[in-house]
Image (tube, each protein chain N blue to C red):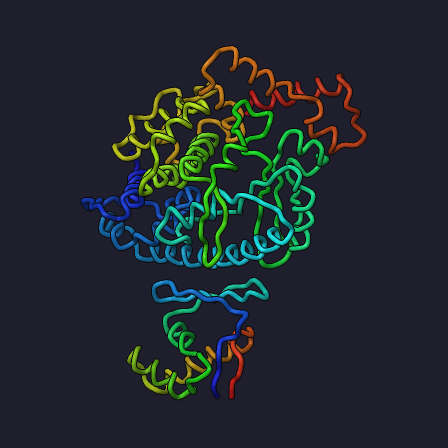
Length: 87
Length: 381
């Protein structure tokens, strides 16, 4: 699956974290370093495998751990309407 | 001087020198809960988070948990800044469409201009100065943005009284996102002895960028004068306000001559002297607390004392400080007497009780009864 950030979200990076503001609801979310890396790359072009490999490379974790973190994060972003499916 | 005070002074010094300073290690064991409370009170937690690397060297016995808590506070504040930025852009657009001019000032301007990142300077609301004739329209616009007039001191007054005495109006959104807007018709109410010329501030304004939009705000000398007045009005009791003042003066090409001219024009020279002493005390350490600051000595208007400011423990209530501090800077005895008289016996049409309690008739008898009660409460505050 390929996802991209929805237009109703503004975001800023702060050191190793990111802040996402859902403009429609006025709620904002703080995401950690791993989440920030994934979020920055949700540009509607990179498939899941590529993002998981990025996490493995940056954080020196196993593929299983990276995959689990990735999926958990994506599920949360979908639930909060912060990303949409491209294909 | 307590360890907590030393810590706060150190933070102030880092902020005023943009972190370009070094301190020897202070091995004190500090009460971190108290420190966090004081940091919250003085609105400097995001700054503590920002300078945590340097501060942890200066105070090696403060835990990393404490600094992490401050850092997280800063990041959360960043979310609030994003909300305000978005709201402000929307409000600006609607006001422009309606041909309404305004000046943005205080919190957001200071946060974006005076600090390395806007989220380092917390602000509880945004302030706009408007012209009297725009009041009703601005009220409608804010209502359309889900902002309701808050139940504060001035809600009960009708618009003609709001305009007559230039009271501020405080709005807040009732649903997410939470933002608060203070709408001002002047920079000090008409009952205040100290009057800014609104036209002077209005004309001497400049463009200021937040994100990809430009807003009108006061020029730097006027911004600095207002910051100084605002801090003094509240007895300088928050470190962030002292830092705001200093950082104003540190702006490149700050026109000190114009600022000094404004000090004279607005009769703030005495306040300026008090402010300079506070800043000197902050950086060099203030004298021991004077005897009259101890609770057993009740005095009407104690001197401004930096150590008391740091400890967040004023010898008088904030309400009393706000009401009585002008007595410190009004130069002539006659002006002090007139001011005091007006505080004790304000015009009948500004006595809130007559609007809040419909059954209470605005007779002279009721008026003096209310004033006697208010004066008694003030003196026993």
